[in-house]
Image (cartoon, rainbow, N blue to C red; front, side):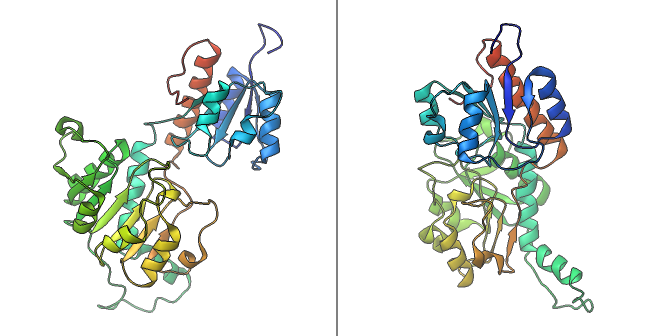
Length: 327
């Protein structure tokens, strides 16, 4: 900042809900992305050179090369989203750049979406909707588009964090499902908040028991392609895979192969390893529900995320530790 009285300059890399953009503009000297055009790596570097902060989205790839640009002025990246695997956090730490995220607030909406994907893929909702829109539905028939019942089945959860627990509550209390789960650390009974859920010693134990497998684990080197060919083969042939976590948790090539061989019954996906690209084989399969990363896509949640990102920035510029600092 050029003067003590000047407002910090914040460059926002993607369009945000109107209420959030108004709030950001009221607090900071904000440069909005009115055209909502993705920033290139060079434009991200220029933004770091010309602003005090970046308010970025999960669509931005902020690599070490981007962060190491000469003449960098910005010392904080406020990420609009809970996941931050698109940011090289290690490089940010090394360079003294603060990184924040927006956790918790999207828990319920993402859990809702996981349940929706379970219901859609099991009851062939996407397939049926396409049939009606194409004018190909002729009449009700007892054998037409028979799906799979969800109520009373077994849900296996990989990653029993906030979203995993919220999904389990909906499944158990709303659909009467049995819940089994795997988590890297032991989850004490009090943390399950009244859930009657069984922790398994391995992912394979969960897969062997589950009619639906829902992924809620973080992205990282340890979880990349966690659902690989071997683990997909360990699922029951009538089971469905649901992913609302991160795209790289699933080996998409292995998933397409497993689906094509009827090794598993179907999949519901909201995230992909190389978004927005979706593997071509998955696009042709009727037993797959494909959504465009809608986990947090409600107005209430998206506004809340934006205000949380703004609060992180305000705290930083007030000389405080941002409440949601990850680096």
